[in-house]
Amino acid sequence: MEHAKDVANGAQTPESSGQHTSVNKPQDPMDSTKFREAVHAAVDEITNYYDTLPSRRVLSSVEPGYLRSLLPSGPPEDPEPWHEIQKDIESKIMPGLTHWQSPNFMAFFPASSTYPGILGELYSAAFTAPAFNWLCSPAITELETVVLDWLAKLLSLPDCYLSQGEGGGVIQGSASEAVVTVMVAARERYLREKSEGLEGEAREDRIAHLRGKLVALGSEQAHSSTHKAANIAGTRYRSVPVHLEDDFALTGAGLRKTIEDCKARGQEPFYLTVSLGTTSTCAVDHFEEIAQVAKDYPFIWIHVDAAYAGAALVCEEFQHHTDHFSAFDSFDMNMHKWLLTNFDASCLYVKRRRDLTDALSITPSYLRNTFSDSGLVTDYRDWQIPLGRRFRAMKIWFVLRTYGISGLKAHIRHHIQLGELFHSLIKSRSDLFAVLTPPAFALTVITIVPRRQRRQRSSIPADR
Ligand code: PLP
Image 1: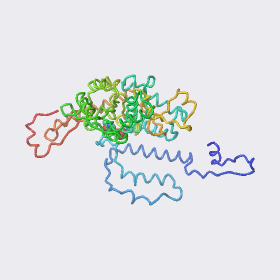
Image 2 (image 1 turned 120 degrees about the horizontal axis):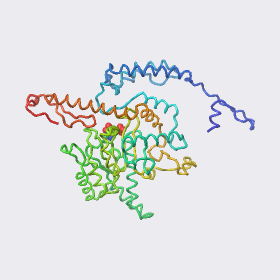
Image 3 (image 1 turned 90 degrees about the horizontal axis):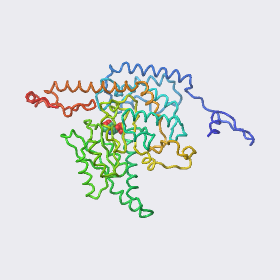
Image 4 (image 1 turned 30 degrees about the vertical axis):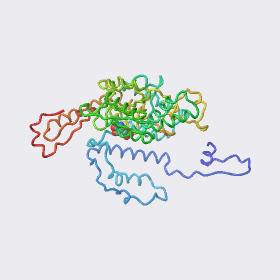
């Protein structure tokens, strides 16, 4: 590799063989001077974008396929200067953007972007080091371990999720990726446990038999990523019914009934997603009851999906939700949703990191090194599906330090207050709106009263 680099840089190789070999490096169209100018111009444009966001229309009005007609049919033959490229941002890209960062954006959940988060992305791009092994860039691995331990404590997760014990955290690209990752670990752990004591062909036969019977569970309100993960992991998926009278939460009784029903059909439930904040109504499953059921089915992996609402755990008033998390196997929350960090920063914690590495560690000779072999370092490639990985800890570190714990709490509490204000405004117009579920983690679910019912509604008492 060194040799190849030297040659590419125009250096000459020893000429002992009598052959003269040198290769000229093509001129770089953006050197550090041009980059400095370009980055200043880009930062000016980005800060101006944020300053003018409130006045921009949130949804674009372009028609499908608008961009193809604005762009040439292929890339330019010769280099273009940055000022030419940059011009196209405002004229061609901006009209087709939906402005998620606008204060007038009201759809889905928040997708945080902050200046410290952007700075983290900038440094991550600058260092571009796919740190799959510790040795590939020790700082990248070690910063990730440290900031995820900070975050675990901040979210009041039980100590079993900290890296000092048997657990630990790893940054994934998304909550869906986290579910696939833990479901694969759950599947492998289940098959291992259920074939214990067998060897050779008998073991293989037992595992092959069990594979066809595996079923992953989630409540009817669990995010669709669990069903998708089951498709990817090659298992059945079954949803557990939930009801309005339980605020759409998964209950222990409902879970037990579904597990027993699966067993009666000869199926093997091996995995369950429970939710802290479902997508549709921000329901919180009944963790204490579920932890009780888990005692009777110790081989079922229980994953807490707190993709959005997990951010609220930075505030003491929400931390009681983690009381029973030590009975579960993994937890995931997206800092990129509600905790001021740019996409992507999905923070996954496992109680036993061995469960991940047993399922995902494959070590060909080219990935071996003395540090990994010593067992004293973390190689995050064994905690995730891809090999290469981005330096995502940097932006989390910047956000945690720039806002501080007090700033993060203030941010969440401000949104909770806005949610309550919204709820009171909605209730004051019961002629127009009905509340389906009251504020939960700043989300109130409402329906619009159909026009023909509006006249009758004035006689109906105000609901939730
Ligand atoms: N889980 C819940 C509860 C969600 O609300 C969402 C997205 O809104 C997801 C998972 C999926 O998140 P991601 O886009 O990070 O995969």
